[in-house]
Each structure stands twice: as C-alpha cells, then as structure tokens.
Length: 365
Image (cartoon, rainbow, N blue to C red; front, side, top):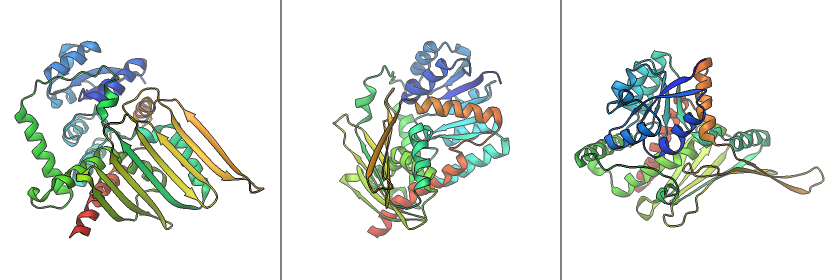
C-alpha cells in the first residue's frame, strides 16, 4: 500500500501536538493531503508549517472530503458526527477523536454511515493502544478473581501542560458562531439525558456531563476494553458545582468499579490510574496526560508466590500511544480489519456517559 492520504478536520491543540507531527515523522506511511478549520488564521499557519498547498486548505469539511484523500482525522472543537458522516458518505476512512459524539443516535448514525460505505471507523482512545495497557489487560485476564476496580482521574487545567508546547490559536471567528455551537451542544446534551426542555439542564449537571464525555471517557473506554460494558450504573455523585464526580459501575461477575474524576486546576500534576484488585493479585496502570510527549505509561503488578511471599513488578513503556494508534488505523485500512477501538464498540461508551449522569438526576428526583 502506498502512503495513506489523510485530511485533518480541526487544526487545534491535539492535531498540532500529536497527529500532524506523527504523520510528518511517518512520511513513508502517511501524507498530509488536506486541512480543514473554520479559523482562516489557524488554517494558514498550520498549512504553511506542514507544506500543505493552499488549494488543499478548506474552511468547509464538505470540500475536504470531496477531494482525493483516503481518510480523515476528525478532531474539531465542534461536533464530530456531521463531518464524520459526510466523510463516510464520500467513501473516506474515519479516525474520529474522542469524544466520538454526544448522543447514542449520533453514534449509531456514524457507524451506520461507515458500514454502508464499507469504510473503517476508529475512535481515538489512544490509551488503549499503549503497550502498558495491553500488558495490563492480559495480566488482568489471567487473574481470574477480580473483585474491585478503582479509577482515579485527577485533572489539572490543560493549559498548564499546553504552555510547554508552541500551540497556536487565532481569535478570528465571530462570537455568534461560537454561541450557535454552544446552543447546539446544550441541545444535544439535553437530548442525551432525556430532558425535553434544555432549560432544565443545570450548570453543574452540564459541567459534569462534559467532564465525563470529554475526559473520563478515556477511563470508560479503558474499562470497556478489559471488562466490556457494565451491567448497570449503581450510583453517581456530583459535587463542587459539577467539577467533581464519582460513579460506581457494576460489571459481570459481581465486580464493582469506583470511578472518580475531579478538577484540580492549579497544580501541574496529572494522575490517571486504573487499579484492578483480585484476591491474590493486583494490577495498576498509570497513564500520562494526552497533552504530553515522551511521558511513560506504567504497569505495576503485585502478587504472592507459591511460598506465600509477596512480589512486585513495575514495567514502563516510552512508546507514544498516539503514534501507535495512527499506525494501527493505517493497518486496518490496508487489511480491511476492524480496529481495536471501533465505532461500534464506542456506542456503548457514549450510552454510558448519559447513564452515569442520569443516575445522579434520578437519585435527586
């Protein structure tokens, strides 16, 4: 297979920090064949930086997907559903950054469009591509006695990490365009939660929903990759105006996962762990923020040997999971195989976001 000709929809932080540099580094495998962004200043800057011809820079994603590209990376700040569906209908393979979308209806429409067109739909859960996660997944499967799972996601302000990199932004879009996007997002969140009137969506609930959809979704995907979808949401608690959330999920085999996400804005110390406890063994994975380069992902195992002596083993992987998932996407396109983070599987994750918040709303009456 020749180089995969990729168009990028959305030239913001994650495109500038991860996807575009990796495609340039892997130039024997990828061609940056088009860019799309609503901001003319950003489009011009990124286009010049990566040598993308002016004729291949688009303000409208419909024009990009109509060009002679093979695939798109969908990562705008706005909805991913509409450009992904348009790309699928144009016969382009899809790499859709998380969150895949807001509602189950959108997710199902995206998957259906990809199925009709016979194209790949991969969702950007890069942490599931980490060798540390894959190692932990195998170790957990071998435990055979999982009793308890704990997820902690302690989240500082992203700006603290992004200031280390030359990320460019341009304030050249009308405020009315942003307002329209916020109104539509609020409508979609209300739809996801089954609220007929968007006015019933309180600020704290809207904030919590966004934290789950935009950040805890990584942990939801990580859990799904090991245990499958949960059987039910046991409970959810939201506090500090929606900037903190704990939910308990019940998985098959009488397992419980306690998952906490909390905003700790001012200290540049990101912590995200998935801890799995059995009667005789433990597996803990520690993930770096996605807004980092060169940070290790760590898997630590604990157990007891045949003589009853405890042991501990820590392994670190330096591989960048964004680069691994990008190459996995190309391989799926080349071979026609389904990605390990498929759009169809991600439907369950999008549904779970709403169920987590609904558990809180239902408890509050």
